[in-house]
Image 1 (tube, rainbow, N blue to C red):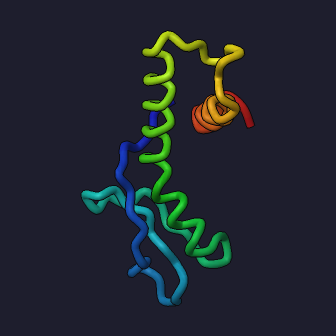
Image 2 (image 1 turned 90 degrees about the horizontal axis):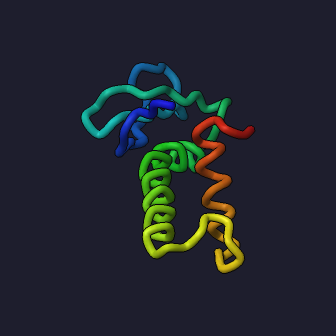
Length: 96
């Protein structure tokens, strides 16, 4: 699956006549999408804008874990590794 690389930023939507809309833009200004106020709130907009960095951080966590010779789902894996794997699978569209 292909993703739009980050970082993304949340900005006020300047193309709307009403308050409360947010744009999610790439750092170079490219519009990723617009969030209408009745769809989500500002906190969700911040979370969405952070998604690329969070995805990269989770992937790096898995790489570091595996580089130490650890299994993804071995008995020694902390519970958080299972959550990391599940979140990455969801982001890739492998699970709902």
